[in-house]
Length: 180
Image (cartoon, rainbow, N blue to C red; front, side):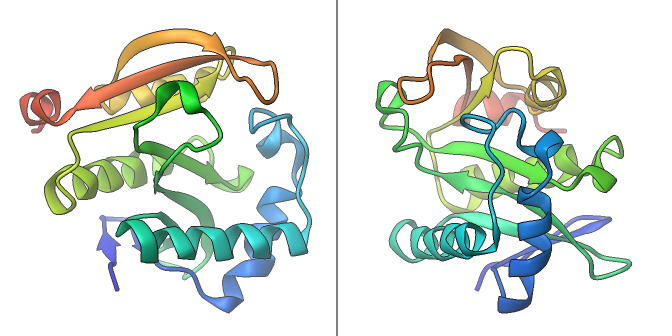
């Protein structure tokens, strides 16, 4: 089982006890505002999502990590890598994504977790390219994307939800150039 550690976080695989706190994150309309059509998700939907994320770990060798606060053991949300099957226009691709509960916003935790996941993707899984897809107007996510060193690739419309999105990308060659 893959576990990544940063100065403040543990990125790990999912556990049964993560369902309720992740469901609380998914039930917050402000958190979900920029996710797909903006709908919140309940506990059964969250459980299904976690099961799908774990399946991707088994089939792809990467997936979405549960993000745990080191000092408290609290689940903050997720970050990690997934195949954006919902968006055929960018395939083949691996996407970096994140979702944290509102109490964890504004502390640099999403950036810290995403940097660890990008490093894992390039250095441990040998990925050639990682993309990030964000809805136009989601300035907080665009700031994180910029901190990851990603570059704009295109602006388009999500075919499922009809919302405008920006696609960013980072190649393994570009990643090597921006590493500290």
